[in-house]
Length: 366
Image (cartoon, rainbow, N blue to C red; front, side, top):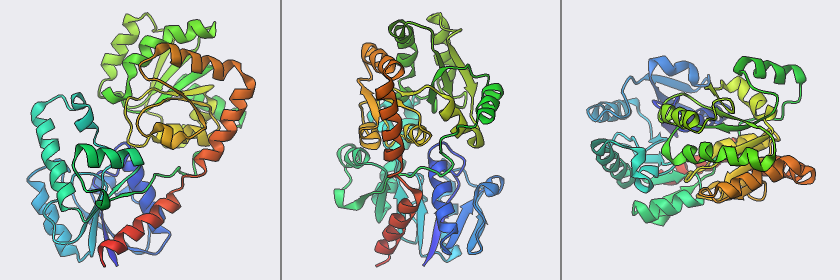
């Protein structure tokens, strides 16, 4: 079996994490994989003796590039193509496997503000869903939205949950913790959020609720909002200033992978108020680092966190404040959440995800 893997999005948030971890597992399994990768992203592909890298400097969003990429796939001699997004080069001459992590623009259209771009998203999604022999998604809720919002037959969808990279372990070395505090100018005590500044992340709510959180707690607690300062970052920054919270909300920017486990470990609590997530890797990563989590009770988050997180209604500032206060003042609860988080996160592995993905490959070639 010669596998084609589309790595044009290997440095994207979410999709890139998924791609890098699957390819790392494939690299250790002596699989024959043709990796279609842009020249500038080759270093992100793990080295493996049976990997062949094909220079594919084609923007995944390019409509004219679809036919060019499809031709490259046909010439490569692969038996199938796995595209880890909905940007598949349809039509393609070999069986197609696509991973669709979520369909958030169908549920929250304002995540794609431009109506032309929104229509283009719908068309490309429909093409990929129609052409794929099998659609992988990452949670039961994502399977439900694919069938309910995109009209995909349930038997065509396979749920394969994401894993947690082994880098996410509790960091207790005081020097390592102090180093990330200095590097990112983090306070001694803080609540942490990590992600992209997008509408479905519900960040205006988080900022608008933070004064109530501090009032409930009875003392100041800095909120650290970490992520690439793109998307709605400026809008959230303006909301912080409007609320008079400039001294209580910190934006350290993107946290590099090598530092992320230490930043999670340094946090007193991890907060994640999303309205919708197809999976939700950040809470799982935080739990693997022993950090207690307070997450919204929406979409895939209860499925992913199980009993290991405090859940709240993502429209209720009072519930958020109550959960954060309980986690930081109830020592028994805090300890239970840390222990349950380590247990829950251990259930998710990239080894299992890769093994189940290989089963999908074999099934589409029968």
